[in-house]
Image (cartoon, rainbow, N blue to C red):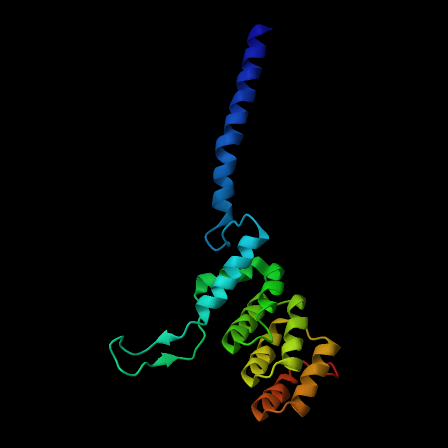
Length: 189
């Protein structure tokens, strides 16, 4: 009996060692390189999403630092890693990105709208419809129309796009909204 107990004890010990040494390694490998970093709290995620938006809106310097006239780019650019990170947060990023909407900073607003499009899905509908209805910036309303492609077409969204196509004060936004009606129309066609 003693030999059987010893073998059983060794088997359990071996199994525990395998579990202790192999599973953490497997867990690290299975996460992959494209996953967002592990964040301890929602506060950490908020800080990361806000940092990504702030980084994207910094104008690119196109002129030499010694030039008398400074030339910058008005484009809003994201690194592929930042896009993947926000996409990895999914719906959890939507309330954070929504804090940049209808604010004083148009560049941050447009960056947040683009990232909402990256997240996609039903959770982005309300923030984008809010931009279409309330933003004083035509460029932001255009971005919202483009990002709506990543959300389901509901009757409320279709009605909002239809209203923008008929009543938006900016001709470019009206024209884009009219084109978007082919993707999402009130009649459901």
